[in-house]
Image (cartoon, rainbow, N blue to C red; front, side, top):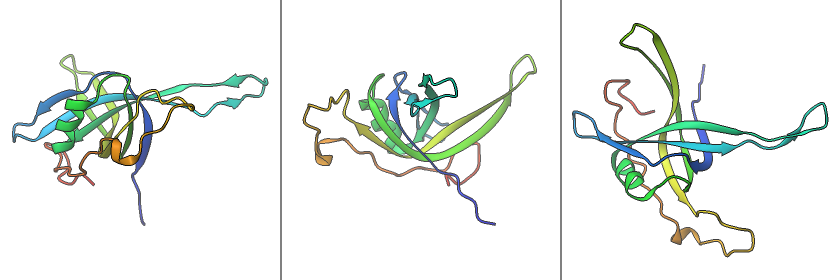
Length: 142
């Protein structure tokens, strides 16, 4: 049976990226993004809007560039996969999380209004898609 694990998100950073290196020297950056939900009208006729929050992890040269150029509030498009993991806290509680492992991160213009001129693709910073194997987890990023 075929399977697919892919997610594409477009939103704004909720915090500045955190940068670390694995024991093997691979660059890792983590950041959060907020993605607006499409508004809809509920059964009572009220307009409902919302925001979803996601944690993103990125590896390699993309991690370095993300850390260098992205800041809280900046627009970003993320293409990647979902990864779930669990751990045990020091007091013995089991914790779970689902995060996006980014394959591609694209910087988007910040606060573009409809009346403003939208930059061409050449003016937007794009990041490489080189992702190394995940340290301590599965050996394939995909």
